[in-house]
Amino acid sequence: MRMKKPRIFLGNAPWYRKGYYGVRAGSRWPHLRKEEEKYVPFPFFLAYTAALLEKHGFEISLLDAVALRLSNEKFLEKVIDFSPHIVILETSIPSFDVDYSIAREIKSKAKPELLIFCGAHHHLKNKDFLQNQDIVNMTIDGEYEKTVLQIVQAFEKDRNYEHIPGILFRGKEEVIKTKPRPLDQDIDSLPFPARHLLPMEKYYDGFCEIPYPSLQMWASRGCPYQCSFCSWPQLMYGSHRYRPRDPQLVLDEIEQCLDTGIYRSVYFDDDTFNIGHERIKEIARGFIERNFNVPWGFMARADLLNEQLLAFLKKSGLYAVKYGIESYNQQIVDQCGKALDLKKVRDVCLFTKKLGIKMHLTFTFGLPGETRETAAETLNFALEMDPDSVQFSIVTPFPGSRFFEEMQQKGHLVSANWNDYDGFSTSVIKTNHLEAKELEQIHREACQAWEKHCSRRKRRQRAQKILYSLRHPAWGYKKLREHLSGK
Image (cartoon, one colour):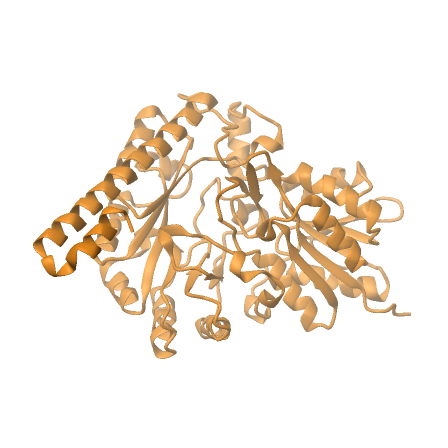
């Protein structure tokens, strides 16, 4: 006999540490940010799942406490008020202790019949986790939209979950691990994310000062490259298969969102957006033919671009690109599986600047083979390229990745405390040549060097404005005064 349709709560729970907040859902790199920052990624998996459940008529609540900066108490209050039958929380390695503590409170006070963890965490694949605690009833391995739908349908019907692939759950006598779920090849069958349930004005990337609010999009999933440290291909997808969406469906989604009048730009936060030149050109043409008239940007692999393609994209409104470079040492990028052609990267960076496209570069210190000399090569390249914005991090070996296994085998892990795996300024590894504290120092020095570089750049720009005003008296005293004051 069917019960009344269950209520399902989907949550991105609060995650705070003194002076910092954490981002997990929507981030391939769960990490801490300084509390005064605004960066919040869009929680794609949660939003797609909510849309799929809505499409099938289920009553849901979707709450992103990270975006809203909710306290634990307020988040718990929202869960209790909804009185869900099923609670689903996305977790991550560095936030796990916080997530489990919140789950315990939810279980005690909201009393859901099912409490489920999902996300990029190795615990979710292991029977031991469910056997050793009684708070979480079920875990989902990998992408979870269609898995959640099957779980909810089974909960409504007969509570028989053994036929659902990709889950672990506590049965009557033992923990049951079902067969692996094949990677979903039909991602176009998913409805557009349930953005109407989320505070869209809160999602902010901010690279290269891209106009805000910015619509964060996926035009594909996955990446065919073999970076040993990258978590989602290994922990969420279990594969390096690249799955592009239908470009016309992507454009339909953008058009629907822009019609709301909320967004001032579009940003494709794909694992690697720019695979397949004709597909990318089709999306760019759509920006022109559909008169979107908004600047846009994407996450890219630099050595897959050229000046001709960049010039074509520029005409469609391409405003900024993110290039993941990691290290400017060819041996290091080859050894970690990234195999980036750094000579071509350099050319593409120069092309990008020449065309007037803003550029954000990302680097990480601590990959195998890192020395003070190779770190200096990376920093010098960053300063020479003079991007509009930059990200320096310390590489984090997430458990379940090849990089973690390599560090473990070499004895290079210096912490087994998952709270330290914050992907921010804490190093949990050493290299053959550098201790963890030295990597942290290198990271600090790179950030300081970049701040000085930006200060000098700002002074040069102000000086240029002054010279321009002196050569063009028509600008007038008022305009000159504004520029001198930094306005």
